[in-house]
Image (cartoon, rainbow, N blue to C red):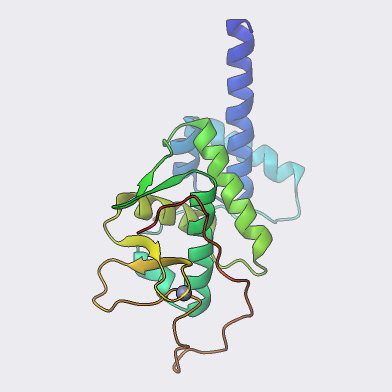
Length: 204
Ligand SMILES: [Zn+2]
């Protein structure tokens, strides 16, 4: 492949990724992080996307990105959905399991990693109706798991499934499937599929 063809292909992939992120209502900052496109280019893409799809389906988010790990433990349903999303990150190779916990296998700014993140998030959307976790929260979940400062993944002692836990919480909890229902929670836990754990992962 000639150099100019190769560059054209990379540009095409970068624009495709940006459009995919716009569809997921990612923030401009996030789109810039993953594609390297300028804010001006992103704004133009966003405008052309909206004029092509004038059903008002896409909302543009401004303000601060999510930064609180506690968000994923606000309800049993959120905890369950976040755990499934974390499992999808393992299955898509965005995170790798080691004896010490999980480690990042993605690179911010890589088109391949960005496309994998979109694919994992789209697989999550296919599993949940309604999906409770926005793309920005999904990206924050991946980032926080990779940092291992607040969120961790391990195996549930009861069912061997993947367990998402708050590393700062003192109490050791079971996974989102095995935890006894919270009597104070509003509404019953929605019927959900069993949590899946990738076979090859060596979660502690
Ligand atoms: Zn369990």
